[in-house]
Image 1 (cartoon, rainbow, N blue to C red):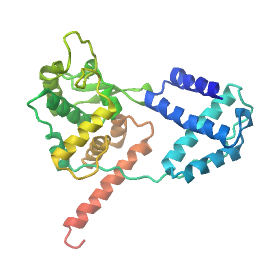
Image 2 (image 1 turned 30 degrees about the vertical axis):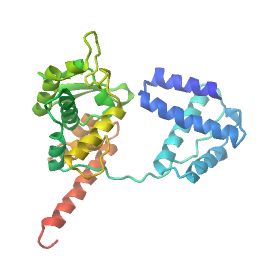
Image 3 (image 1 turned 60 degrees about the vertical axis):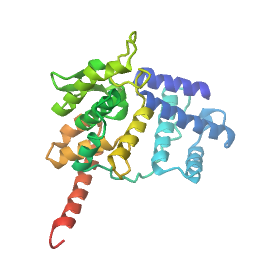
Image 4 (image 1 turned 180 degrees about the horizontal axis):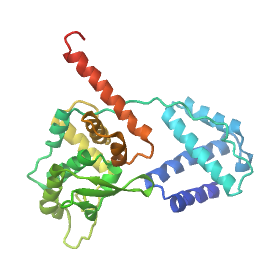
Length: 297
């Protein structure tokens, strides 16, 4: 069964061109699935898997306290795996045909107000190369709405300051060209001219735009630590995630009348329904403003 999993992961990498983080999620989900089949259901042949085995697996996960979002992700992974086996003639049926994904609770993303964004963006100290880097990263995130994985994946050649755009590779290896505002361009220019070289050794040929103190590409975990520290220094009490500036970017654009399709394209959403959740955020915020300021609210 493990060999079939390796074949499937190879298919996702080579033919589907999925991102590394997506591959890791598939592998983690399917390893736990195969372990369950082998140890609890005593199934050692994937062709013997029945719908009831998968239903029991999902109940097993639920009993462990897994969220509906995690269950839905496992269903998607298991379904894709069995469809692959059927297509490759490694199985003669697909046991996931009548398996339904759990209903997801659509939580509204947390966003910062304009004042909070301003406070956060001004938190880095600009008298050292670390501060110049952090300022450039925050300005770039808020200016473009790119994902943190896309931010740390940027190379120096992906940013075109004179023309005012950034090129990034998103989910499924899809390329996006996103406009870059003057403020963000200025912060990146300052970092490139006065900060980035101080992270590098003389012999370094690192292409990554944002570097850590070893002169290597900054990681997601490294960025997350920086964001938590800056949030604390800025005195922002809201619970932030690495995606908070992305959510704020989308919400503030829509609040100011931006076209939903244009925002979808900039965010790199395959489905516009994903972008539409931000319209709910703007409606909620409008209600809050109404309740606070209308004399008869």
